[in-house]
Image 1 (spheres, one colour):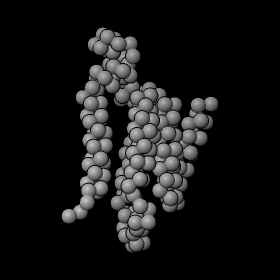
Image 2 (image 1 turned 90 degrees about the vertical axis):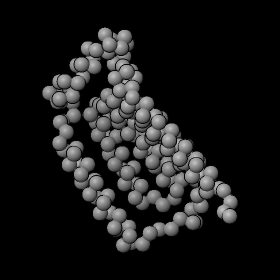
Image 3 (image 1 turned 135 degrees about the vertical axis):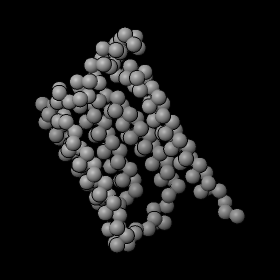
Length: 179
């Protein structure tokens, strides 16, 4: 049953990604991005990556949507211009190259759920066995995020805070009268 739900979610994620190509209204783009991110959060949770699902739900679905809707107050859709067709086609080449590179990298990954994959054989047992002894917590996810990867989590949080501050500074600068 979970396998069919995962496939349905993957198709819905793909459909929402394709919908972004045709949507032209800014509010509709924000809604579709929010739906896309929410579907990814559910998919990550079903795959057992609860920590990634939580971050996607908080940052991708909630904070991004709030920030985008807040930014829509500052953007006049009539001022936005569509680039010419040659310039848009020029942008397709690097995007297709990056997409191809990402697909090539995904093909090198071990099959999903493979018990003989290196992370399952070497990394996971160390974290599972050491979470209680090293960190005094039976919650392995909390031990990994807060203790084993504490600096990484702190830096990820700092990046999100820096991005929000940068948006606020740009908006404040844009609102300032020109001399």
